[in-house]
Image (cartoon, rainbow, N blue to C red; front, side, top):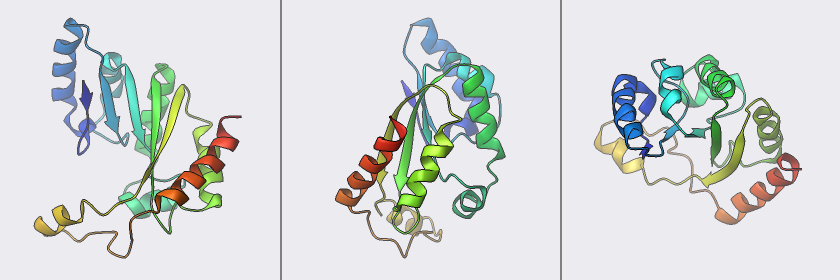
Length: 167
């Protein structure tokens, strides 16, 4: 079972209750999260077998620009994952003009050094498929000026990243 979202950590009480039931039947539990929620991370993670962690950005300033939040909560979540020795798969959306450069790749390599038990890193090319949902909800689409990420360039950047991170 994988909890995803929106952000599942914003529904901690529900997640905990469902996880208890799932664990009674020995069901593998993953959570797909950006690492920002309402707390109760230790209790939630006590039931979770795998964390799929979405990295929004590696620097506090750009993280704030992208999310409107401070990095302290995601850093707290990462600390709890590290303390509990949780298996982690990193998911990094590559947004053109923001993460599609070697400087960001190098910063990602550095940033991931403090996250333990990273088993896998996936790059997800940015796409505009969610744009229509924003429009229907009357919400300003934050990436109106962005085009879909070129998949070949994304693969090239992943190879650059991989040579530095998995050495």
